[in-house]
Length: 283
Ligand code: AMP
Ligand code: FE
Ligand code: FE
Ligand code: ZN
Image (tube, rainbow, N blue to C red):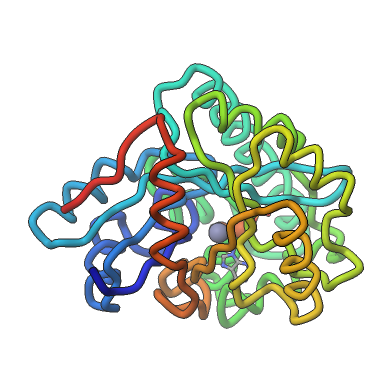
């Protein structure tokens, strides 16, 4: 089998701009052979993505990008092939989505003192039940003409140092890895090298995550810096971790294009062999 494997994408179930079905069609158009749908803190897109892939030859890997927090730092954990009906997963993702909603309302409340922006404007940018985040606030700011696009909003009004930002509840990365493993899933740290070599998660912390079942590191990602990647290659070697690459596609919400970074078939096969909570959907 040939074809590209992209294991990190978002739909409108979280902060992507395309529905799961549109995402699947875009994946086929981009020449992918396998795509993972990894919405933030939600599995709500799995069914529609698989339905859209039926008969197309595309393989869909059910996944998620779980929000976690280490101190003040946001850490994203990709999870593949876990049981979506696992009680721990259902409770924890529900808790995170609720916290994200409260946090977004609170950010908008403070923004509304300085900008013409209301909560309804943000809701208008989300789909029913979506995992709400700053991207939806960004889209509302764009719709109101305050900024030209999402990325501009992230660089200014929604930046952590803008004065409007606030974090939301998220579990510790170790608890998140344990949760995913307990649900039969395969945990991979998402873009762990975005802040350069010095800020890559320290060796002793990685060791603890590996002990709990961490499977891999997403090294090939446009937001990992060159020095960050170097450090990650060293850690992957030291701890015998799998190396993945992916686009982190968000439709028109981000410049990232499907298939711009990919994962090898050998690594995908190992992920599929390790995941016991559900199976890939071969459309
Ligand atoms: P939040 O999780 O609510 O703090 O928002 C951060 C999320 O925004 C991350 O998942 C990013 O991938 C996402 N995002 C979507 N579009 C953009 C963009 N244009 N610039 C920066 N981040 C973005
Ligand atoms: Fe995102
Ligand atoms: Fe992420
Ligand atoms: Zn992502």
